Length: 290
Image (cartoon, rainbow, N blue to C red; front, side, top):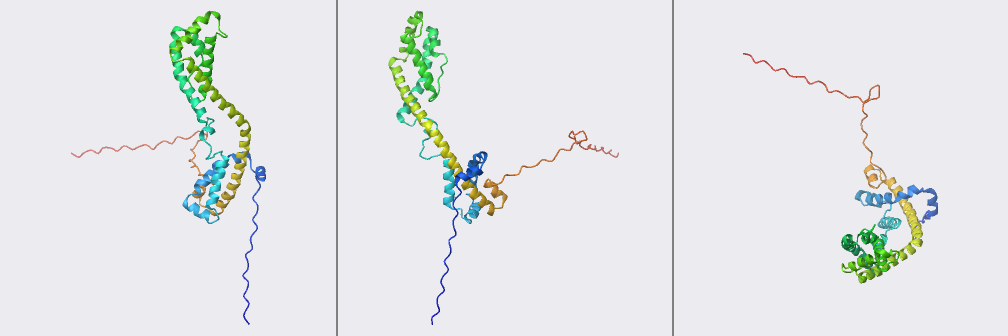
């Protein structure tokens, strides 16, 4: 009779424990620890690329997808997104027409303010003080406020609103003089239109930020919790297999020890002792034999 073949034992799959819920991690990690997670994770990710460290981590299951996951979580936790324009992160306009309007106003203030002061300071000092008082050329969106004040004051000189009757003739003459110095009605109208375009961006941005800021803060917190869970898993793994201190330092899991200075000797009164140098013996000159 033919011998029966023994059945090959089937390897049993070990149950995979579900990941720890982030809500549970919130209860065990303090806010100060969470704040340090970004820098700790960055140190670990940088150190993990060193050849000897990478070899040891790879032996215990640290793969390219695990490394990429760490970078992705770090970017999410710090608010970085490759698809988000830098101008929007800085609070600047991303619409080309709005950006052009801001640029137009910004380029005017330095030249326009200078021409106004040069024209009015000698001929109409009172009007110059009224128009230019407290105004300075600024950069970017900061220029919008002062240029708007500048235009409002010129409108007051022209219309007489809020001005004394005895200054009406000088006010109008000052505006007429500025017409000859390129501060024309057409230029002022163009600046008004540019200001309206720039102001629309500010209103839209504030409306968006009101709802987005809270949601973004919550999203970053959740990403930081996810980053913390990733960091704890792999930092504990690294400590288990890496024992060399220089490699632990490279991963941010240990710190360099500061050199301890030798204590200064002190006397009975607690004051530092000043050690005197031993006296130098002078050599006597030998007498020459006659």
